[in-house]
Image 1 (cartoon, rainbow, N blue to C red):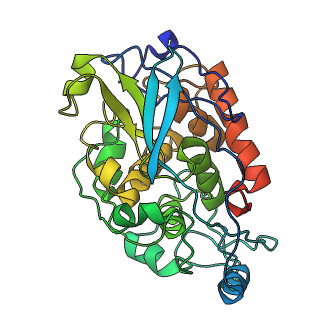
Image 2 (cartoon, rainbow, N blue to C red; image 1 turned 90 degrees about the horizontal axis):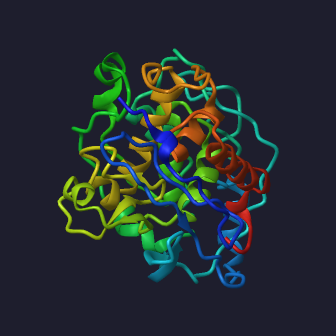
Image 3 (cartoon, rainbow, N blue to C red; image 1 turned 135 degrees about the horizontal axis):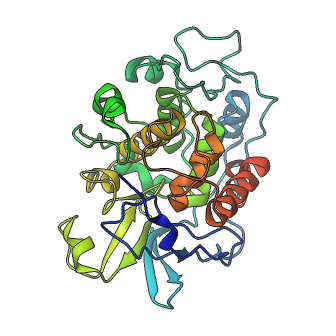
Length: 328
């Protein structure tokens, strides 16, 4: 099981003020490189038809050319998908929460929210969550469309989780959903019992909601071989940057399917949140700490300095509701 993550270098602040990131990893593939993300140059164009904007506001759907990034060793990194298309500002009402369980709390369809369920809670099915998704048609990342319309496939175990968790939940990871980027985020947050807004904020931190994002380039032939690539290769893919060289059998589905990418990443988070990493995650690790698990996705450790910086970055996106801003 994963251990030995302390040998990693911690991430450095990126140009945009977001933190660079690594994935939680097992010691079989050491030396993961952190990345530095280029800031988006200037504000995105803002504008939309008044009827579309009114509908977005009513429903409160808050939810591609290549982009070059510099790694900490100075090498150029390629991450497809720097968007310059128009974006909407969505003004959110005060949240009226809806449970991700099968019994919904009273709330209007325009303001339902999927929130985090405690450890041990019964998790809703794919189909239940698909029915609860607020479908608005809002798509701030049209370049995600092909991946958003691609379903995943079962078969990958949740990396680092104990056998009992994988036996119970591993077969749930399928990416069996299609929709807009935000609808996919809603669906997976519902399915795994997590806050949809924290998930949106994590996607901001990881990829600015771009499924085409590539990360963690390596020259290590052994690492690249695990995803059938020649060195050098990209290791992390998609909206939540699933690291294919660590999370075995997730590549290429995590690259090709947005739903699978988010499905797997939140399954991993649920395993952490349920205490399924107790045989390798040290430093006071415990079940029921969502933020601790968010940080562990980045650094592979429990509240080390890299994890804390990453958590702070996600919290900034959450506080600002960055996906609702004009520059998004």
